[in-house]
Length: 180
Picture 1 (cartoon, rainbow, N blue to C red):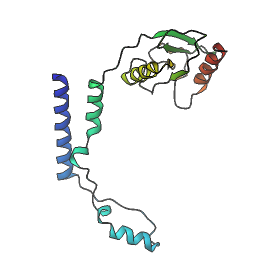
Picture 2: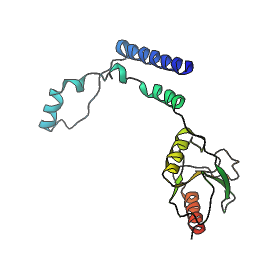
Picture 3: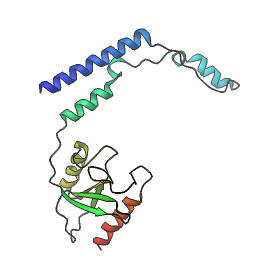
């Protein structure tokens, strides 16, 4: 509890310092680009005083994102999921992992949710564990897909990026074939 209070106080202090600094030193005019030949647009721009002033967020909204991130991670209680790990080797030798939130059984007819974490996420991330737990209590089967190089040896020079969907497609086809 003391750590959370300290983090909160530091976040509030950092927000206050940034807001005061911005209030005193960082006021800038905004350059507005628009079609000056259009009379109605020109009338709106000229009548709207706040468009010509520097942007200044309200103090309580200034930099709460960083405070929310820190507090959200410290305060969120995510259940421990006893994953069963399955390694899947791709045709080029690349290695993926499937983390089953409950025991895999071929004849299980419950709907399957495949969770693919973001770039820095993994099966142990609190947001993934919360999502998996919420799906499980609603009677879904849950598997978390770890892409190449996520907490496992990277066996090929191929890394994960937003355009690499072949591995996901192969895993989906494999799971569909298993459940026929």
